[in-house]
Amino acid sequence: MSVLTRWVQEHHPWSTRAKLAIAAILLGLTAADALLWEHLPSAQATLVVGCAVIVCICAVPVERVPLTVRGTIAAAVSWAVTLLFVTSDHPVTVEGFGEIAGLLLLLAAVLWRGTPRAALILGPALAVACAAVPARDVDPHEWTLALTLLTMVVAAFSLLLRAQSEQRLRDLDALRSAERRALARELHDVVAHHVTGIVVQTRGARFAPLDARATDAVLESIGREAEEALSAMRRLVTVMRRSEPAPGASRRQSAGIREVREMAAAFAGPGGADPVVEVAIEPGLEALLPADTAAGIHRLTREALTNIRKHAADATRVRITLTRTAEGLELRVTDDGRGGVPLPEPARGGGFGIEGMRERAAAMGGRLDAGPLPTGGWQVRARLPWPARA
Image (cartoon, rainbow, N blue to C red):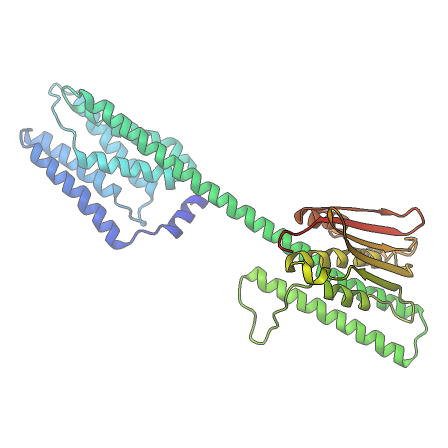
C-alpha cells in the first residue's frame, strides 16, 4: 500500500451510507438503461445488463477488495463486451449510463488513490474502456467525442487531486524533518551546554586543590547542571512523543535576555579558576525585544559559551555584548583564550557548533561570523535584523 493510498484512507474513509448510496445510484442507472434495451435480443440484453452490473459492483468502494482488483475486473469485462459487439455481425445501440458512471468512478479512484503502478497501467485501460463504450453502437456519432472529452476531464481532475495530495505529503515530510532538525539542535544546545559544564568542573576538580567548602560548591554546581540537563531531555522527549507532560511536570517558558545574565553568572569553573564574565546589554532592549528574538539570542549566547568551554578552557575573561545598531541588533561573545587547553576529544564530541549558530542566525534573518581576534582570543558576532514586533 502506497503512502498516498494510506493517507487517503485515513483522511477520506467511506462510510456504510456512502457505499450504499453509490451502489443504489449506479444500479438505478443500470435499471433505467435496461428499460431502453428491451428491443435487444434476450442474449444480448443479458450480456449488456450483466456487464453493467459487474462494473457497478466493482465501482462501489469496498476496502476488503483492493482497488486494483476491482478496477481490473471492471476493465476486463467492459473490454470483452465491447470487443464482442464490435466484431459481431449485429452491432446495436447498447451504451448505458450505469456502466459509464461506474468506469468513470473507478478511473478517478485509480488515478487519485491508486499506487503509481496502478495509475500508470490500469488508469489508461479504464479510460480507453470508458471511451470505447459508444463503439458498440451502429453509429456512435457525437457520443464517442463527448464521452472521450468527459473521460479526459475526469482523468485530469483526478491527477490534479493526486498531485495535491502528494504535495501535501511532501510538505508534511518537510515539516517533520524541520522539526526533527530543530529538536536535534535544541538537544545539542541545551544538553551539551550543561554536560560540558559538568565535564569541565569534574576535570578541573582533579587538579585544583579544594577545601571542604569549595568541594561542596563544585558538587552542588555539578548536581544543578545534571538536573538541568535531565529536565531539558525530558522536555524534548515529551515534544518528540507529541504527548502532554506528566502530572506535576514543569512548563518552562522560552529563555530570554534575563536568562542570558543568569547563564553568564553560572558560567564558572571549580577551584577559583572561574573566568570573569562581563555582560553589557544596551538598556531598554530587554523590554523591547519579542520573546522569539530574545530566545534566539539566548540560544546563540549559550552555544558560544559552550564552545568556549570546549575549545578555550584557558580563557580568563569572557565578554557578552548586545547592542542596537543601524542594521538591527549585534551580539558579540568574545574570550581571551588561546585555545591551547581544549577538552579531550571524547569530551568535546561532535555537534552543530559554529555551523549550528550560523543556521540559527540565518533562520532569524541575520548572519553570524566567528574567528580569532587580532589581539588574541576568539569572537562570535551575530548581526540580526530589528524585529518587526519590537
